[in-house]
Length: 196
Image: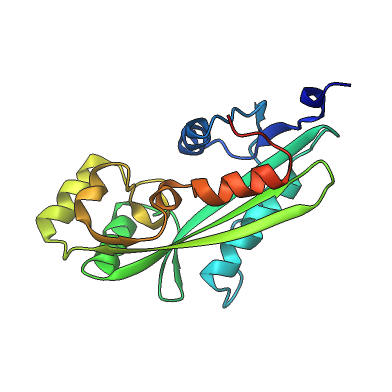
């Protein structure tokens, strides 16, 4: 049996096009995409770091895996203090979130989990600190009108127009986009996935 036959195939437990694009940067192409259906409601008093770790592991374990497959799942959230900012429910919620982020630092946490062919779940949590400038009413109107923040954790996409709000970032930029590349590469390699 050749060594290539022993390399696991990767299943991506996410329908996020951003995660696929980020994986492509390190030469990894999933054999298939699976969208796990789990309850993403935060537990009472759950800390953001624990929340993303739990969801990433839950998503990875919820996907059926063949013996020669490894599964990668991730979850990203924005937190102001202990408060988890999920995806905005509507425009008013988006405006509330942008108001909370205005002029202050916040954390972007990503939990990533790789379940290898051995069935072991390998989990990492990555924390990036981001600071927004003070947002004017015109800034918020402009961003809300773009529609970009809907469907995004914390109500913004750093890879889009919201990057104009960022005055400081400490940590992994790709983490804020949705998948911390360095840590993901380490986990994939540990599970036998070859980076391209």
